[in-house]
Figure (cartoon, rainbow, N blue to C red):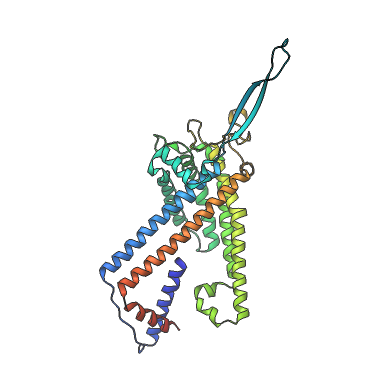
Length: 374
């Protein structure tokens, strides 16, 4: 959506620039009523709010619950008397059945119902205020450090890593609030103690480095593929021969493939590992809202017994079984489909509103901008 708006704005600016270079060119005047601005503004605000709500509830909240849920196993012992001679006492046979319950996060509907049962309608936004506070602090830190270093992508990536590492305790607080039952404590009272910084800093640093390294790598790959000119101006594709155009499309889909594989096999596993490391530090007095093995199959050794009291990054990912991984990827796929359909609805509604507001003026405006940008 942002790229489309950028393209349209660029076209408009090019038309204005050509008019400045050629004052004799005819400009089609048009008027937009005040109610039109209000209607479009309210529509943008409404759709942005709903889009953020979808992302938070289904991608962030349910995604995090999926990362830590470990479906509980129930042991059922069935006892029956076996046949035996009359002169002897009958002996008992025991049959042990292991019944693994269905994951709560297997479906969006069951997850939302579970959350509502534990916290009402607003439970789908649990922890949102903490994530907002974390985001605000993160951007303030980045803005402060950006002023001290040259404005380059590398320095920006380094600062992003530093900010994420410094705020690791705040992010862990959000994870704890999301995965645990409601508490009477304020969120700042649930921030892990200062001693936990050394346990969280390393995993947070690694996760931030992976995210920034992949981002920088994809940006450089995009530039080296020579796709930037065509994204900035799609009309340039029309000037290419069929072979050249096909080559551009191959490069574009190749880039998308590399980006997809990088996210699936590098970014997501690192993020899952970080989340499970944070979950391993959940205080004993906090009850998990989904079935959750605090020992991670015995890999977490309490500090009182000489352990670190948390799980390591590699062990955190390995302890996340294939069923959980499949559920998580399904969550992300569903969210992508929901967001895609929602954006399409937004474009349709916005286009209809613009048509209603401008009427016949829209055709003249589009024609003028198209001719002026040629």
